Amino acid sequence: MDHFDHVNLLRPANLNTGGIWADFGAGGGAFTLALRELIGPEAIIHAVDKDRSALKELDRAHRARFPLNSNLLLLPADFSRPLTLPPLDGIVMANSLHYFKDRVKVLQHVRTFLKPDGQLLLVEYNVDSGNLWVPYPFSFDTFRTLAVQSGFTEPQLLAKHPSSFLKEFYSAVCTPQV
Image 1 (cartoon, helix red, strand yellow):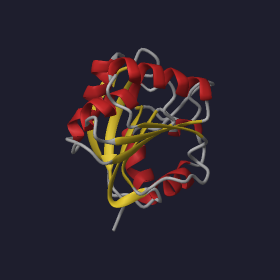
Image 2 (cartoon, helix red, strand yellow; image 1 turned 90 degrees about the vertical axis):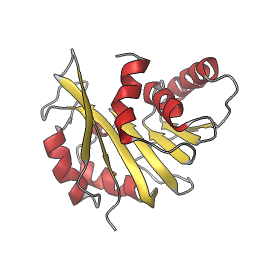
Image 3 (cartoon, rainbow, N blue to C red; image 1 turned 45 degrees about the vertical axis):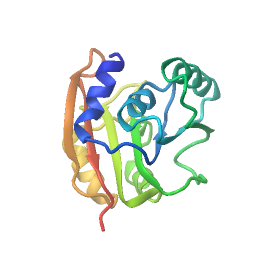
Image 4 (cartoon, rainbow, N blue to C red; image 1 turned 60 degrees about the horizontal axis):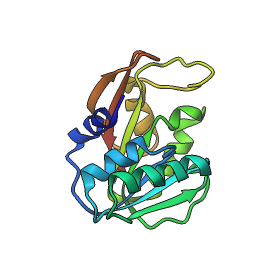
């Protein structure tokens, strides 16, 4: 996948420009850059990842693609643990939740960072069995159950994209239950 594909997985969410967002498990920033393109230069994005070298790579890529924008805040941390963040308008989690066996617990924790009308954008492999590199993937059908169990509304499927690794990717959006 390339930048165009990443953007197109998120684009159907019809995101408003601006706001305060986070990318949990940002890694090298493929979806952070896609998010930046969609929510604009005024938005603040907190890129959260345990891998400091990946965050440095993201910083370089962000400066190269968006040289006049400095609203990217790098946070070397584990998003499944307590974090100090402002209330967020949205969170992107792209291929980061499949590393956790207890996904409901992690999603419940993630929900606490969102404003009441905040959005969770998820990108995941559309399969229910993994391997050594992707230990706990979950299909969109499974995410429908996980999201509701975790205190989110039933997710809306946004898009799919083929994957040569594990069938396909899907993107989905949901909000905290009120």
